[in-house]
Image (cartoon, rainbow, N blue to C red):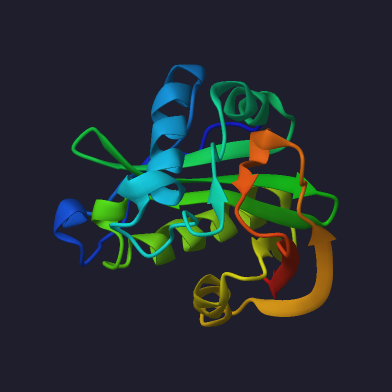
Length: 191
């Protein structure tokens, strides 16, 4: 586990975070709230209120309490939270993988999407990886069929690598696929 970052605030255009969200590292007691946020951003009808839904690609869960708790227990790993007025608005997982940072489990509450919060969370994750581990790049994997999401990352400096990983069909911890052609593409950005 990595040391907790100093709580800080960032200005934002979103009315829910007008004073700027406070960022902090998740603690074990935050796990249920993190799981609820991730599920609301990606699965089921609630996720359709935002643009990050995977409800047309996957059913079932996106994560569970055991998986999030495991991320919190890893060395050189942090789940960053963005909060405003005590309300969890966004989260992401960042960990060191050699000379590179890995960015994942990125979730913004559907009601807080579209106001710049996601850009702030991504920037904070990149800052964290540089400051905590001195990494020179950040990478992630994105479902290839999520062209809108890949384009969003490209606008933030990430490039498609053409490197693909298979979707873990048969492992319901990652959801129940609604189509047979899912795979992940690796994206990377120099920091």
